[in-house]
Length: 182
Ligand code: IMP
Image (cartoon, rainbow, N blue to C red; front, side):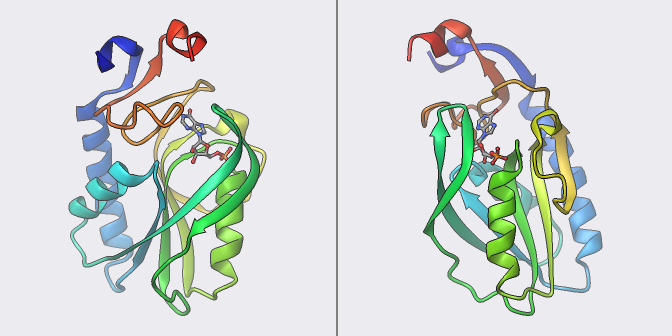
């Protein structure tokens, strides 16, 4: 069973949703005079952006990018390839990049460079998880942050290990024997 693979729950479904309501309230207040475009990155931010957009109280537009990062199953090398671009033009628009987790920050830095080159009116980041202990790029405009996570590999609520465990409703840590067996 899926849940048997988890050693420890870090953030429960209830904790995630409570925090998400707070983030949504802050975003709704900050962007009250605008109609922001939320840009989300597939596949990890899928559940987060789906719940966040339903919790905000202002109209928002939504668009997706998909990327692949090169590296091991548990870390990116910072080399990122865009495999799906946005459908929308972002020039002159208020863009909020919605991320699942920022680890070294290399992926977010790549996405920011790509988006900034298109001349948005503003560009900020909302991330569910922030692993600051491993940060390499420390100039990211993170305006909204769900939780700080310790330097451990986490899965669930969109986050995967070898494409699995995204569908856990909470965020947790895998049992070492599950990682060793794959
Ligand atoms: P960064 O470029 O090092 O910031 O890595 C960001 C990406 O690495 C995230 O979008 C995730 O896809 C992946 N990642 C980093 N840490 C974790 C983790 O603990 N669990 C699952 N994926 C992670």
